[in-house]
Amino acid sequence: MSANLKYLSLGILVFQTTSLVLTMRYSRTLKEEGPRYLSSTAVVVAELLKIMACILLVYKDSKCSLRALNRILHDEILNKPMETLKLAIPSGIYTLQNNLLYVALSNLDAATYQVTYQLKILTTALFSVSMLSKKLGVYQWLSLVILMTGVAFVQWPSDSQELDPKELSAGSQFVGLMAVLTACFSSGFAGVYFEKILKETKQSVWIRNIQLGFFGSIFGLMGVYIYDGELVSKNGFFQGYNRLTWIVVILQCLFPWSHPCNNSHFPIWL
Image (tube, rainbow, N blue to C red; front, side):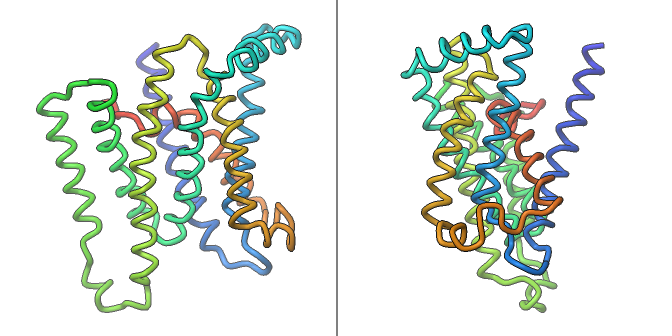
């Protein structure tokens, strides 16, 4: 029964990850009338939805008691300000990473992005060795070398790209590659940092996700104001939002639930 549950969870995670990449890529390249939705606002909305979802889960664990929910949130978040502030670092990094993923998928095709983004496995391994003193075996290091080789081959220019430069801009390819590589490093560091925090405290992962979402919303709103403040004041916060945009936001909201612990973590073979 437990084995079936593991395979089911793995299948759901694969479907969720793949659908997020494809829908996000399609939403960023779809040509429609009017302004395109702002990725910075989508990140903020996803964080707010994540907070609401995690509060509902804490409410369920509290036997659906509002008084118990209020006590838990007060005791675990407000009464522990230093523990809460520890989440500001990974939250800021995750917010940056989520924005970078939009940039990457706006400039790279889905397949190249998906393969290149797997370098987060390598960065997570390196940060785990340095920050958590984990030891990797020969086969694990060999697997990481094979992964790097595969990513290098994916980035190798093909004849079609050399003959048809109009189809894919070199500048946009470079921007997308830099964005996804930066996201890989941020994902690895934030994931290991978050794991270290979880091991040092006894707070539930739902409380930690609420704390992450709180700081993520603040950092995200700062990004909206700095980079897209003029567009928001002109066309509104939800400019360009349609059904596809909301699907992307919901998938992005669900995806980071595995984000701190699994998204940037080792796969099963590690």
